[in-house]
Length: 224
Image 1 (cartoon, helix red, strand yellow):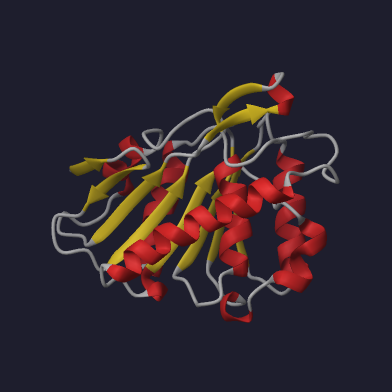
Image 2 (tube, helix red, strand yellow):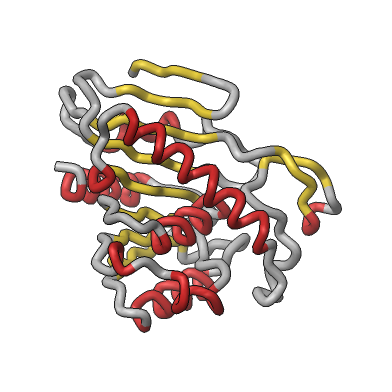
């Protein structure tokens, strides 16, 4: 793996010239290194041309962790009350992802060859951003997460990504973001007309081998 690190991200460049990109957002309190080790396990061809970018979230105080500063895509005010969400923080991270997309476009990657992925809080930003992005992306991969700002979804979604391939995975025994939260998010998306490939696995708030295999197969389909 050809790994390049900056203050803002970790990038894995492919063996051959990149023709597609996966932007993968980490969870609360982690950083861009968190999912680097998964890339070799995805079963991609040895000569694949997919670049993986793992941005670092900014450090900010997080309310549910007693205001402790940590890497977070937005402040989490409450997991019990979804009417209390950090709208400004979510949109600031959406803008950050837009910046990564612009960088890839400047390097010659077509927008329809870009996947937005994320785990947990990063998955929430992936959902929020991809559904609103004004041009057709390649796919959306939200893992062990939920849909934020659901009350604004219907009026803010982009028509360009109405048929976006979505693979949504969750753990049956997730004690951090319960399975029901992910399931209800998938149902909201379906009610809005999206086709969601929903998978659940006998795991907690994590990823597992079967899930990684499914992600690899899905990526080969949306970024052939």
